[in-house]
Structures are given as C-alpha cells and as structure tokens.
Length: 57
Image 1 (cartoon, rainbow, N blue to C red):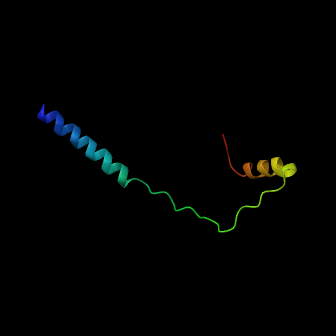
Image 2: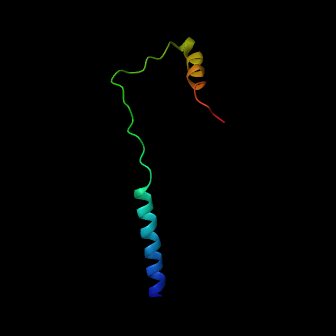
Image 3: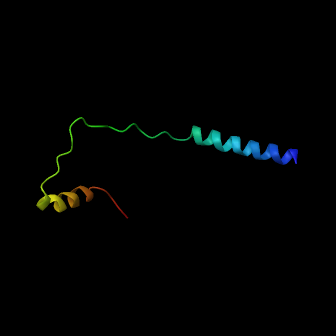
C-alpha cells in the first residue's frame, strides 16, 4: 500500500513539473486604439476579408 502511494505521488509530481516546464505563450500585443469596423452594410465583406487571411481546415 505504501509503495503504491509513493508511485502515485511520484507520477503526480512528474506531471506537475512537466506542466510548469512546458512552453510559455507569447505575451499578447494590445493596441491602445480600438479597431475600426466598417458600417453594417460592409461588415460581411470586411469579416470575409479578415478571415481569408487565416488558413482554416
């Protein structure tokens, strides 16, 4: 029983260490000025244009 507890504790410690040693995301770049969105009539075209820049499967 004691050995099982030590094994589970060891595996948990390894998982926690791997989580904190993992990759760190880049800091986001926040703009001080708000994004200018076109009027409602042109909004769909604007969204389509912005989304076409990203490769989506």
